[in-house]
Length: 331
Image 1: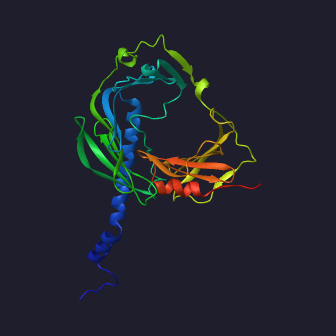
Image 2 (image 1 turned 180 degrees about the vertical axis):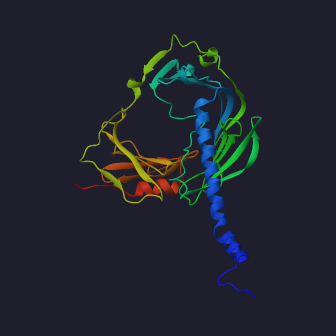
Image 3 (image 1 turned 120 degrees about the horizontal axis):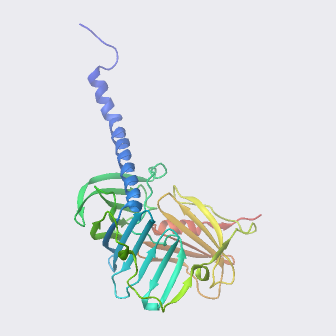
C-alpha cells in the first residue's frame, strides 16, 4: 500500500478553501468595487443628461430639483433648478458658479464648485477606506427606469455612517444614495426620479429661465471670509481621534461676524470629514453639548477663553470625541 506523508490533495484543497478562498473572494470583490467607483467618478464629469431628483434629510425635509449636465468642447457645465416655489437656480462652468435667487432679487457669483454637489461625490480609491469600511455589491435594482448596481458601504465601527449607492449599470452615473446612521436609520437620501441621457445638451437648457437683469449682484470677494496662514502662537491639536481619521488641513479664517480670527481644523478618514472651529468666547451664547440637523451632528464646549465646535456628517460620538479632546499647544 502506497503511503504519503502530510496531507493528501483533497485535504489540502479543503484547508485552502476554508482559510484562503474567502480572502480571495473578498479581494476580487474589492477590485470590482473599485472599477465600479472609477466608472461612477468618470460618469459624474463626462455624461450629458437632463434629470429630476429629490433630496431629503431624514423623513421630513424634501426638495425636488432638476439637473442638466453637459460635457463638451466648452468644458463641464451644469444647471441646477429648484422645483420648489422659490425657483432658485445654480449655473456652473469651469470658472464660475452663479446662484440666482428670485426670492431675494439677488445674484451671487462665486469661483469654483458649489459646496454641495449633485450627484454626491465619492472617492474611487479604497486603500485608505477598507480598514474602516466594508464594501459589497448587492445585485441590481431599477432607479428612474435604469438598471443599477447596488453598492453597500458599511462602517466597521460606530464612528462613521454607512452608504448605499445605486450606480447606473450602463453609464456609471450615480442615480440614488442612502446615508445611514449608526442605528441603521436613514438620515439623508438623494434619488433621480427621471433621467434622459443625451449626445449633446441644447445650449438653451444651460441658460437660466429667470430674468435677473434687475437683481442686485454680489461677487464672491464681498461675501467669502478671508483666510491666512495660521499664527505660530496659536497651534491647536486634538489628543484623541476616531480610528482612521487624520488631520487634513488647518487654517485661520476672518469671519465677518466675528471681531477675531477663527481657527479651522479639518479631519477626514478619506470619506467622512469633520470640521473643528475654534474662536474666542463672545457675549452671544455658544453651543455647549450636542445638536444636529439631518445627517449633520455638532458638539461644542468652552475651553479657557475659547469656544470649540466640531461639525460633520458623522455620528455624534465622533464630533464629541474630537471636540472634547481639543487642546492648545504651549510653545
